[in-house]
Length: 221
Image 1 (cartoon, rainbow, N blue to C red):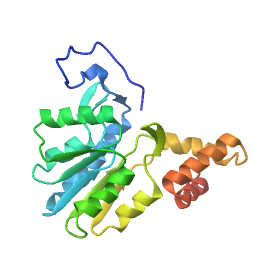
Image 2 (cartoon, helix red, strand yellow):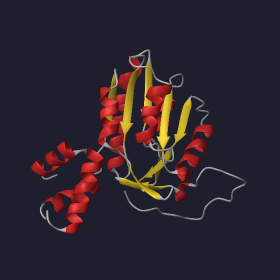
Image 3 (tube, rainbow, N blue to C red):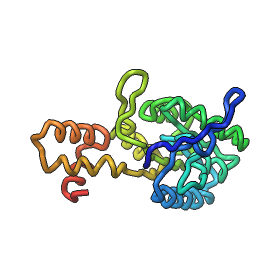
């Protein structure tokens, strides 16, 4: 993902959607990722009792090669207008924009939750979604491994979250790994006694679990 490219923002009266020049610009591989995501969604059209949960909702709109595209949660809500769609986002600035995009497209069934997905997913299972009641597709697509939330560092994903999802009846997970995060990790594996390498390895293990990190080591990703 490249950095933000900003132009002149539109004048606003109160809150409004970000202008295209203010949106984050993503690399072309994001288009391929969202195409795969849409194929999974369309495969789920056959399920009468379906639920979609997006753990890292983003802003709702992104820009790839100067072309505006709906993000994963907005795309899901558009494809399933009468289906529960839950989207979790920890960044309050992204949540604000996501709500505006949902309102702009009249996506009233989109349930936007501001918070940590590692906390909110178990809460949804306790309070709103009964085991086996629906077929659930999870899209887990974190931006990074660590996010600063309310003055503290929070892991964007944890092994506990992945276990919670995969063990829940009739749930399936589409998970994307952060290649930019794992490549420095694989570099660090070659220098196991370097302090930075140790810190990176500990972060990877905290986010992904020791088993997956060992797989990364063995396969030199």
